[in-house]
Length: 107
Length: 454
Image (cartoon, rainbow over all chains, first blue to last red; front, side, top):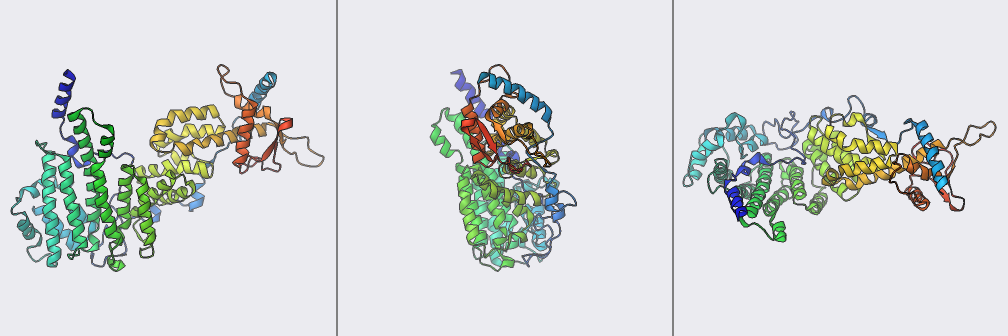
């Protein structure tokens, strides 16, 4: 009984705080790019007389890429092979020998 | 009213779509906090239409055809009504409701659509208005659904779960239908390209993608892609669109392929988005990588470097433990990292491809066994050759390395053979199992573990 009362109280006290347009947290959504584009050559819309900031756009130099490298050269440092040769190969070899003895003993 | 009317006229005279769109937002600009309130207070329901035609079009500065003028007056009348509802919410007046705001804003959207499609012929350079109105329609719909859900649960206690589920996104689904009309409005425009609404197609598609993702109807995105493909001959080439439209589009297309487990295609689209994304858009770059990293793992078996993840601490935390275990061939650690990150992986819908990393970890472990095996006695005058006959016990032993002595299960040789044959089947290992002798005969000449140099 008291439970229902609290619930009702909550409901009336609850302000319409969700009303504000920006309240939503869209944390996993692709964001709009800020409208701070560059002056673009007129690609479309001849009736648009002054086409500053037509849409957010940017030259390729401002895009993600390792500076001064070609697309492929740049990506080499970013992705690594999934195998690794120099990671304590000696250690592993010893551990392997020990385990091998146990496996063979139990077999 | 004054400042809003001036902003409208300036934007129109400048021919600037974004400036015009900024007039039609439901949020007052930072430099003019009071704009919406003073706009709303300047008139009343009876006179708003007359007042608007006077404020927007009286005088000599802006001359528009009568039909176009009327279209804008109609739009701003419903905009005025919507602002009234928004202010009620902001003031937390009794009876204020986001659902009402959503419905009022939907009228703005529909009136705007009519302005474009009807005889008034609002010109295509004003398209950013369509995007802005659609964007807020979606935002209001999401908030309206939240409000409906909270009232439902507080007011009626228990609800029928199934009914609640259907109703959960009722407003957002309605928004999706309106935005879909905006999509069609852009795609089906027959005007010459220079003045075509086709220039808005990718922006509207992106908005619909986001909406369909939110209502968990990713399948519906296929219809949009089909429609775009069908009229691709009439569309300007993607590279003539602003990068902001195309990067977003490619990201979503990549994610759509990703969810279909088409990792090769997903990688293609995501790589493009990654390379063209603005370098300061950290959040977006992080999202692209969230899907690109699992793609790379599946398609090319490569891992993100420290340098790649340095600007993204969240991704570093998400992927680093897993990457280290894969590289080291640490299966126990891999399983631990998978279960530690499970919740986040599932939420981001990347669990499935990441799980495939276990094969790569296993390959790396068995590769280390092969390397530890050393070389056969070299024949005279020849360079030493790696020992390619490896006893199955050696692989079994490797699976026990690093596991704690207590509580580990005995490793069954059949199980080891099963793991080996799986790797061979998947092309991660080359060779065959000589079962009668209990050995694995691996391929000679640096191709036992293809692509890894040995």
